[in-house]
Image 1 (cartoon, rainbow, N blue to C red):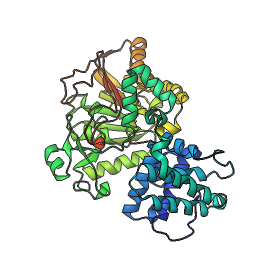
Image 2 (cartoon, rainbow, N blue to C red; image 1 turned 45 degrees about the vertical axis):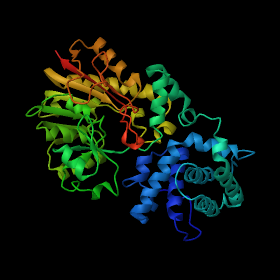
Image 3 (cartoon, rainbow, N blue to C red; image 1 turned 180 degrees about the horizontal axis):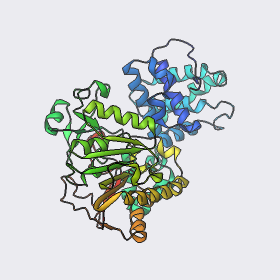
Image 4 (cartoon, rainbow, N blue to C red; image 1 turned 90 degrees about the horizontal axis):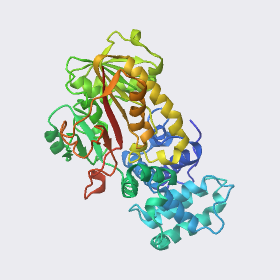
Length: 451
């Protein structure tokens, strides 16, 4: 693990949480590290383990807010600097952004946000001489933040221009702005339950969505919620829960779940009675899938393999009655949950991933028996990773044909199915008076049959 970026100069209450938050923000913006790897697992920031549950939640809240509103916060900071950020203090920006997020957006007292940000820079030898600058900038934001934002468009500020242009071209300007606006709010937690969705919604103080998922705002760690240890449900965005259901009744069928980790779709298929073979190239991620299987009491065969390099001889169960391929993608549909994505991805990433998706599709068709069903999906808003992949596959492989999805096929699909019979969800769908309780991930799914 890299050494901590800040060493606390005192034991001021709340200092440790702000230190960790600043380190994580810096990791995303200047070290190319994903938010997930810094928050969970063996690569998580070491300081998180020393915090209380309450302070860990505060860190996530500060970091999430900073990344969701990064354009706005950078505008506020730079508006208060005559000469820009000093080049010889690389960690100064993170301390300023974390402080500005608490002052301008979060309900944290201004004096606490200013004081703790000043302490952050005082604790770093390269930043310490800028403590007065930090104090002046943040106090001005506290005093004049609304005025500094008066003539600015936060939707445009908080979304990289290349993404906003892409979404405008694909979905129209209004829809693109609605997508971008949806990304500014932290989403609620969606669960897939084994049974009795209404009962679990009542017990967990949530609601049942049109598609059957249970949505709630969690209070405390997920692992401490009723039903978690017993395996009665698992965390899975409502949109991510749809592709497995598009296979229809799978009881007794052999189903390959390709690129399966962390396993939400495998759990769905196993719970529905399928004989599932879950394939993923990452052994650590597949280990997490096995843990989820054990917790929920469900069974599936697991195979560590690169899907592009396997053939039917690899699997005792093949050819399969059905194949579900959740292909690696740019993940631009999951920015509500992963606000680091717009600041770590580039347009070039789409080009490299498109080739991999095509190769995975070709391999998936080869694993399918005649008459079998293939569902291809990505958590992407980009047509190159969705609609265009299916068009290209149908052009090059006469063995497969589209099996259109009907809007009345599953509860809640009305408005989510395109004229071509494909599933397309957008983050701005299902608005709610409480922003956290609205929306869902951006997903694409198509269903094909092997002739």
